[in-house]
Amino acid sequence: MPATNHTKNFSLPIYLNSDHFNIVGDLNGAMNKIDEHLGEAIVTSKAASRDATSALTAANDAADNTAEAKESAKSALAVVATASGKSDKALATANDAKKAAEAATSQANAASASAASALQNANQANATANSARQNSESALTAASQANTTVSNLSAGIAEAKTAGDLANTTRTRYIEKRAGSENKTFTSTSETNPGYSYEVMSKIVTLNANDVISVNCHMNHTTVSGSVQFYLYFTKPSGARDWVGTSGIAGYFDGAKVNSEISATFQANEGAGEYSVALMVATPKNKSIVLNYGATNMIIH
Image (tube, rainbow, N blue to C red; front, side, top):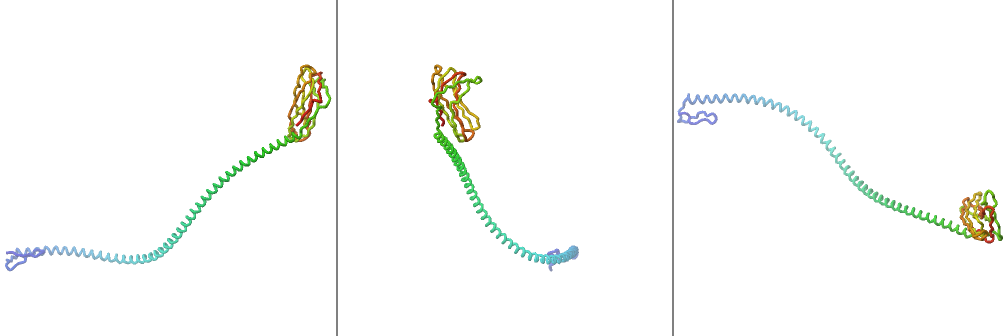
């Protein structure tokens, strides 16, 4: 019988004592398997040798590269060492800068706090200044109003003083003048001016600038047909004249005795000096009236 057992890997025959050996069948088949497998092993070995050679070459290249890498690594280590030293210095410099920055920050914070306090003080000072300005403006307004009041009072006082002086002057200036004690006849004979006037009486008064006087005259006279005219002349230092006129009282018949009056107010508008006040009379043409001088007077005040 053929081999009972076989090898593990190539299944070659392994015989027991009881097995029947067959050279052609068993041995040839085993040899063929051995040859086949050896051929495959040779091919595989050659391929492995090639691969090993390539691997060796690659290994050599890798070794060279490793050496170069090692040198580069050494250089890198040297650079790293140098960089480390510089890094330590930079770190120290950075630490110093950090400390300086922290100190500057602290100073800046203190300055900011001082600035905030100064701003608050400035705002308070500004508010105080505004309040003071408002108070000053109010005080100025009040002072202006008070000044206006004082000016008004001063003007009023001045006016009152002027009025008082005028009243005092009026009281002290009271002047009364009578025409005389006899009767006097007045006749208009002017052919060119039938109303030609004659002076009855006059009075010179000394006045201050802008003084005002009041003149009142009372006349006792006879009447004629037609109008009898009375005038008051106020002659100034320059010779200029102001005047007023009025008609005398008419009687029921010619020769009737009546009382007439004339009044006027004059101002010394040419400054201080002597001014003249005159009572004048004018009769109709060629007609006469009689003035009772004893009952004719002029009052100036």
